[in-house]
Image (spheres, rainbow, N blue to C red):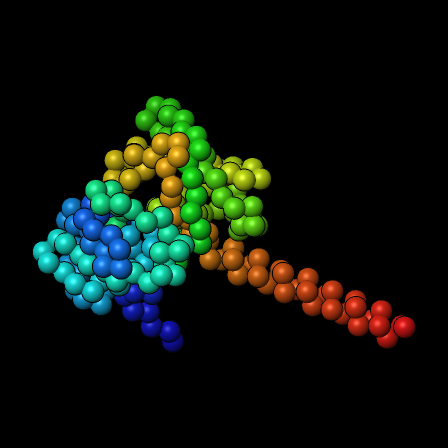
Length: 212
């Protein structure tokens, strides 16, 4: 039997927002609500899993590694961010599996608003195209969203009014940079398919070599 502990995964359902107070290796976020966190807990900040190194009331402190800085969109002081605690082992699972390990930064390219809903076009790196499927899941700034459509360099998601009010999605506009994490199941499937193709290519090469 496998036992999960708090800190192993997230769901992409934002619990509250916060405001960045300072950046750098000592990163500080003031949460809108008391999340009951203690030193050592994990928190997804705009989809990036960070370890709490200090707590002063609603002010949370994190030490961020150079590798994390390289991958994420680093918010400036005053920026609003999405916050989600890691899922407890006894918690009911919603959203989709989010690890908190950001794959790349995307950019909002278009915004279309209809009857309270908002449709966002978001750019991504072409090398990641195999990790996206229509009606599949993607975490954008930590928010679990469903991919509506995909082109060669962009995908489209639709955000409901409730999510627009409860997350930073209500602030997104063209040029806004967001953390992207692609579905981990899609990553494993892609990796397995690539490994299978490599094995087949190797078998073909060896067969040709034997034939001389």
